[in-house]
Length: 133
Image (cartoon, rainbow, N blue to C red):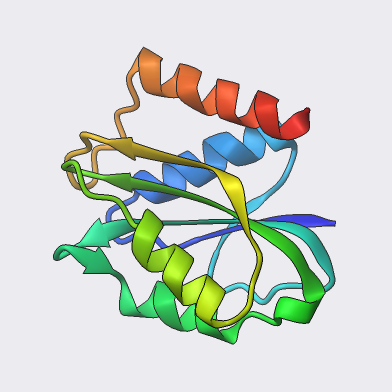
């Protein structure tokens, strides 16, 4: 079984999670929704806020049961060039959760706009197609 969870302050990451979910036929849910273990893959997304990973997402990563998750595929959004990749990967690996080499981090979003360009929409489709194999 697979699941999508995200943390979104402005709606951009939520929209990205929903777009990934549409492509993978999964329902995207906020990290406040409990996970039903075991999982083959957890798609986990968030965004950079104040130049770092959100405390809530970091706590969520630390709470995951590494024995019940095959892997985590990370995704995220940001307004600038930074991404959550490094911080989220660190939080997950410190909890001994396996992190997939696949991931997608999109940049250039204004808070609350969730205006995905055609190029970004294409990147999401390519990303999910690669995940489907």
